[in-house]
Length: 246
Ligand code: NAP
Image 1: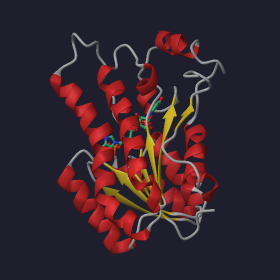
Image 2: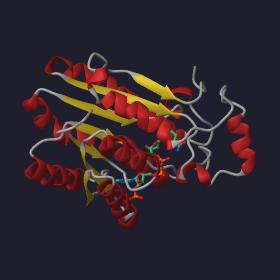
Image 3: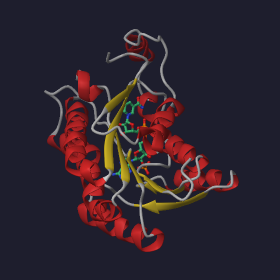
Image 4: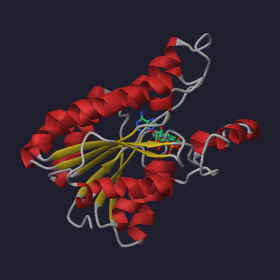
């Protein structure tokens, strides 16, 4: 149970982030539902949590922006006094083959997926160190482990996120702070809805379990990593992928 804990989930208005927010709130955590552009979706996530008897608040911040994320963390710490669980879930794709990939699309994906996580961890690290406890969970991807044609920017960002996870895990382990990554495979959200039926079929054929995952499949593992059941686990990458990356 996460009663008395404060969780901050980035990109929690929609998709996997929303499900993580709902799940952590059900476990008893007060949840800060971060969003960038989707205010209505974030408000809906908060309403759902509150109507289930939980505590939540939506706060806008573009996590890719160093100064904005610093101000966001300051705002949260002033009000809640602490953050126990940080889930770096915010992510974007701008797929293209390397020949056609623009510098802008490369930078945009790295800025959100990798620098966004760096920003949040860096700005919260002093508070985590002071309380000598904390759970940081980064949402990576099997694409960062296997690579994926058409996703050089995305794969690089997620491989980088795995490196960031392991390095920070080594830095913070002796202070009671764990840092782990969850690497989803192919999950049914807005991010994957845009794929053609042919592309979906091809992807499906690479999943030993033969089906795509749900946001709940990911959220359950995040809840485990956020709770005391995972207290002796750090620096790990847990694939939630139906066996794709085994
Ligand atoms: P999604 O439905 O497209 O949602 C993306 C979320 O990220 C949205 O809530 C969005 O918020 C937020 N976001 C994007 N840029 C942001 C920024 N600069 N600052 C703050 N929030 C930002 O995607 P999803 O499928 O739920 O993906 C969630 C995470 O799982 C991502 O890191 C993704 O890479 C990872 N993942 C997904 C899959 C999959 O198959 N779906 C597989 C592997 C990994 P706004 O709408 O408010 O901008």
